[in-house]
Image 1: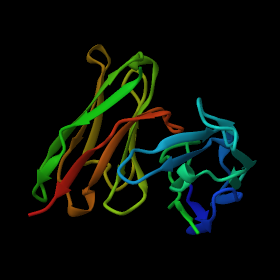
Image 2: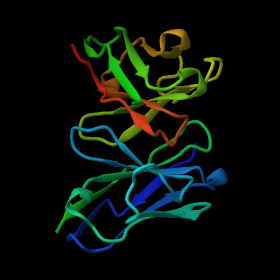
Image 3: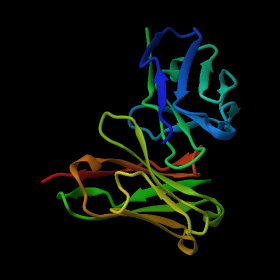
Image 4: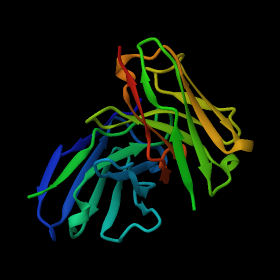
Length: 108
Length: 116
């Protein structure tokens, strides 16, 4: 089973700032099958990134994903008020398709 | 418009059973894997199970293997999660989502509470 560790647990930033979220895998993620989701309270997750770096349909270009192997990053270039939420990474290289524990992005 | 709608959640005693359903529309179910993901109150996301396009390939997280069964009826555009021998730690909102992983569409979820 691939264990995903996200850091930091909580990130406090202001609108307009740049956010960098990390997701580290316990072993290499084959074919970079790594996705990112955003979740707000009371809502299902929203699909942001797949294949480590490809934005899903309709996702603004301020969201970008990068990385390969065991180290992955989600960057939000310039935070908008609606971006404050919890972010999860997930690997889907094989079952079990594990999630990271999440990073809470909060307004400073 | 792609939609997934879960139903069947509720309150059940430890050791009991529930059958969750996921009604899909707006896409051809037989072309897609479907995943079940759960979220315990105040906790993160946990992948539970998934099923392939024709229902012949299924995977489960260890903690539910042998207790939960995922099935698919492509003719009726529906996916089911039969949950037996439920435990308190199975209490969560259960989501169905389109995809093996990298799930692009999600339902709103159905709450399962296991308590006496």
